[in-house]
Length: 141
Image (cartoon, rainbow, N blue to C red; front, side, top):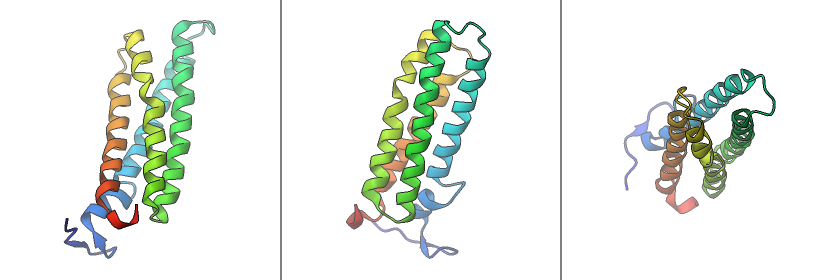
């Protein structure tokens, strides 16, 4: 696969720029989506006054998962800066799989706030990141 033309400002291909350019690169978009989704969950969580509420517990579980996912993406980003693609894939996969169970939690609540859609968007961005890792610098993963 050819990665031409080269990104004029960075000396690398446009495909590589899809991954590395921040905040418009896929990794930056995934990090922003995780942050936005976590903030939405936090707002809904804090809006429930009953601490024993089943819904509040579901939100709490997903808050923890998104906090962990954001930490995993930070690690992926650290390895991305060093072009260690195997580690980028590893940490991105952990971030994505960590929030997958939130789909079920959000669906149970019939939440009108589009959390299922937001969660799916985050997972899709992680999937794109993984696909780019498989194509960019194939000899280094």
